[in-house]
Image 1 (cartoon, rainbow, N blue to C red):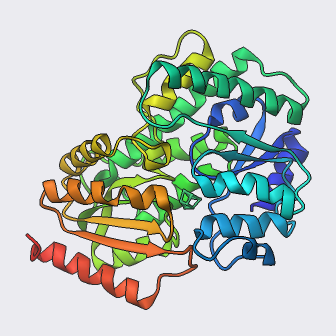
Image 2 (image 1 turned 135 degrees about the vertical axis):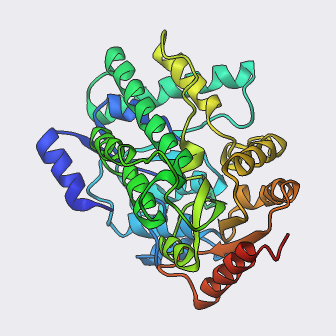
Length: 364
Ligand code: SF4
């Protein structure tokens, strides 16, 4: 938790701060209401409190660590917590935290629709968006201003557009993967206007021609932890040319949706315009086609699947990822982790061997 930054945002700007569990949520509404979203992907490392023991050991580290962190008072700087309906574990936390963790601040929920767009799911998400805005009003003490919501939608659209340019132009960006991902992940807690400035500066560094000389690989999974995975990849002679992490690329919404009209309708449409993601129960066949297209246009030579242990939504989709890699004749490396602070020596060796195999074309 970025306590000093949150305290500064509250002190200097009078903002409220809300801890947000992964993955998808309408950040535009929070921004419009002057609420700082601080995402909690764990945090990584060993659980920081005994309350992790309230969950079975076969529950993922993201849920266990989040419960331990919040129940031990380490998130007390925020004014509320938001639980998107990502999976049963996160939904369970919404009950466990107040019941067993002593959490006595608002615990908000956001149920995003599962599956593809259809009349019922479109109507459902619109009601959820309005409901979340109403819940947030009780935290901020102020009603949502429609014009401000339009402004926030435009702001996040620009942020997504810049992220898309950086990810699509990866070979032309003179930056190592660690620096790029650190930049992209700063959006998990920075006030969006500050993040926008950083993203614009990075976009301005894009060159006309490729500068990356390593082997291009694709990476898909949940969240890039530990971040040292990128130093290992770069050190082995590869770079990430295609990203499909839930925390990164799967949250970059394409820019072709409408922007005019009722802002809640715009947000509803943006929900369904997002790339396919198993945490939203996207059809695996649609996801496989999406990945195949991504692998094809980025010219990657191999695919790394980097998942948290015991993550049902992600692991259910691994066969679809395997099919899309196989359809392109790409070798695949499957890694599982538990939010360790560093990669194990065994994992480092597996990555190095995979990159060597891919770069020499021995897998073809
Ligand atoms: S089960 Fe998967 S989606 Fe759910 S909290 Fe754990 S890592 Fe996230």
